[in-house]
Image (cartoon, rainbow, N blue to C red; front, side, top):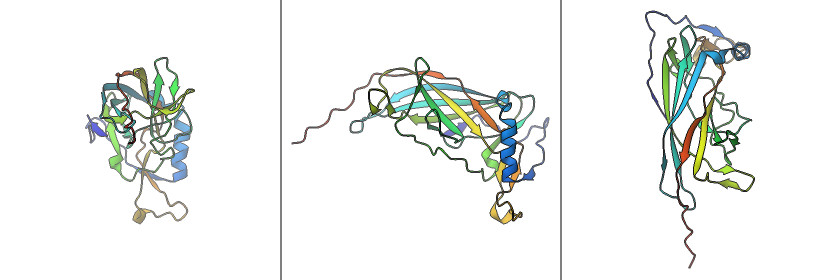
Length: 227
């Protein structure tokens, strides 16, 4: 996964507020109080650049999707945005990680991967300010990722490849943390071992559009007969 189009640093027009220290509990409270309204401050545009059929491996044909995700600050103020550090395909429910890619058929019905390729409870605190980028109003960053389409489940079969045809893909993005965890040597509160330097970053849940892409025709490899 590569990040492109990042603009780091602070514009002379807007100065980042000085960070404060908050507890783990206070950070989760920020998420709880802001998630209902924060989605309007972040727009996510998904766009599939291309799809490639890779060399077959045994009975499987890997299909690679090149996905651009553009995060835009749509608020009237600058903000820190935690960049998604890992993308993966997930099911419709049961995951609380920060960036889940969803698959849909051409009618918009969700498609369940047979194996989820991400940690569904990956909610670790960021460890430094480098996990965030500073976005001015209207400014964007683009996350360019390559993903292998997963095996999927259906009423007819379990763990099969997506047949050729048109599909859609979208992102569910979630950030719990408005800042990053202080290193152990700076943890000074014996009652809370997870003091957080609060950047007042964006927290909440946001969804992208559902980008259309096509799986091209391909042929599954034939099994070699055993002599």
